[in-house]
Length: 102
Image (cartoon, rainbow, N blue to C red; front, side):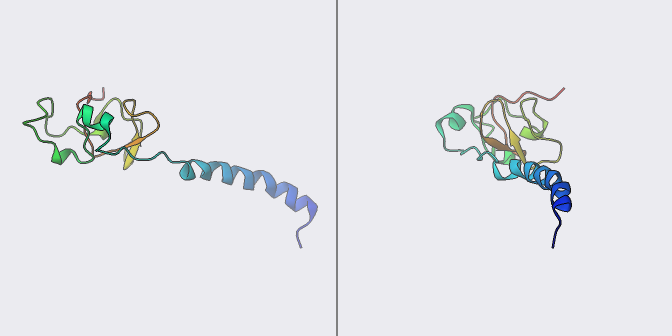
């Protein structure tokens, strides 16, 4: 049986673990390539599928992961983007708002 003292000592640890896990549960949805906003900026979840005849600004090697607007960390599969508030984009994605990270 757990004593009251042990319970009180473990309570902050449990609360911290729960708070740390919370962002994983509240992850924003991915951008739908067929949404009007995504279509307007030519967003695709896989930059290798960009049609260069339609997207003149595209250059090989460009992807959300190396864009200044990408809010994910290096190595993340997805992350936030200033163009799509409240949504996530694929790190391998691309759109016409691409701006090379400094």
